[in-house]
Length: 299
Image 1 (spheres, rainbow, N blue to C red):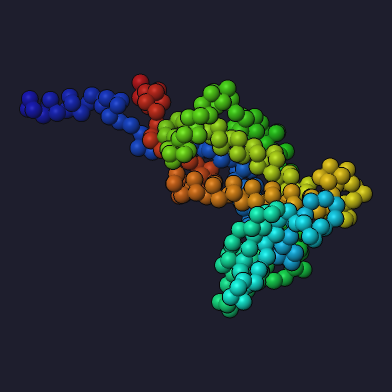
Image 2 (cartoon, rainbow, N blue to C red):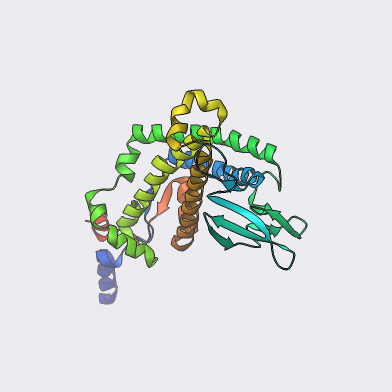
């Protein structure tokens, strides 16, 4: 009987807080407008990159200025005939040449044989070589992309998403060196710190949202002769249509780099958790709930 009473008394006593951490702690991290606009952007991005590369393949050279200076491109992807009589892929940046055989300049075609083309078949949409269709796809999705981006900016300002979630704070700036080191060592935040963006994420997202994406749209418009009357000032600002094409290509490359880093971070930080949060909105916080939050729930 004494043993039974002791056991019942033990069961009646609450367990110490430090031994009862929350096994799962979820927060509503991404609201519906952000998730919806994000996935529209994902589709537009991949279609526009693939179709843009298809357009570039028709003339794989970039220039600076108002006219094409065929003798002095600032960037080009070409095939050069070697001493063996075969063509080899070469990428030129100014006067510097880089061997890119097998990937850029010369790559395997759909039949498995070497094909002379700037970007390989697997990277271009809607097919291996179709300038007309590539332009149609690119321009159609560009309008969807531009409207989607405008809606995102309007919603972000109206809901204060930019100021509340993305604008770096004084604390963020003080911890920027620590954030750089943590990213370099692939260390990711846990607990309450994982519920918000770190300073590097904020700066990267702001650069994409406020610089790269609007820049892509504006330089794309500047390349169109139909916009000369309405946006001639932009063409003058950029230094000419060929300069606009070059800047457009640079912005596209920066966005591709951002997406590559973004996907890498997803792989090392937990693909399922992050993708689920962008589908459902709910994010499972690594490390469980902080001790002070548990204490508030279990006084």
